[in-house]
Image (cartoon, rainbow, N blue to C red):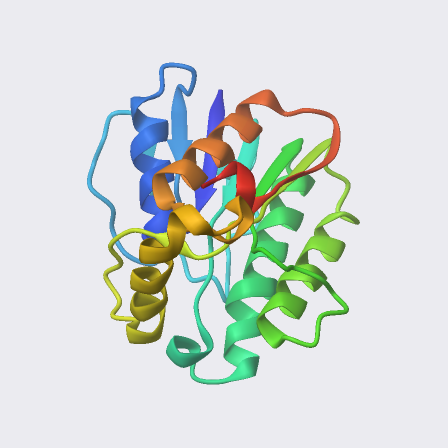
Amino acid sequence: MKLLLVGATGLVGSHVLRRALDDGRIERVVAPARRALPEHPKLLAPLVDFEQLPEAADWWQADAVICTLGTTLEVAGSREAFRRVDHDYPLRVAQLARQHGTPTYVLNSALGASASSRIFYNRVKGELEQALAQVGFQSLTFVRPGLIGGERQQHRPGERAALVALGALGPLLPRRWRINPAENIARALIEAAIAAAPGVHVVSSDALA
């Protein structure tokens, strides 16, 4: 299959990219990104500006899209900038991929995603899920991890403290509140893309612990 991956430079996306390149079921990976990725025989990594995506590029046509784009309010700097990265970019990718005939979309969303949430982060994720459901994919999967475990390039002290606390309490917590390793999330994203089960599906955090 041919996989289109957006967000390949992030924590989860980098795990998806590594697994996809090693997976014999995936023949080709297209990973548009803002900075260069290491070369690989299976990889096409066009440099793009997510504010001005190349609408006519033939690489939009794939068997499935995996989207792991995302940031934080602190990194984004404002609610508007956060929404642009976590809502507008993934939705535009979905629209272009679907216009070119791609039938399957898998999103790395979040535990608690809901368009009616009082929490801004969860509300944006929920609004994105709602919008994606209207794009017309034959197969649509939302993977909803909780706190993601793994080494990030960006320093996030608050997240780091939470990881330490949850790591110590892990065995005592319900599965849905335990740390979700990035590797587990990547595996779930890839399996959903390959399975391409018809309809809309959710992979919850307790399946990722």
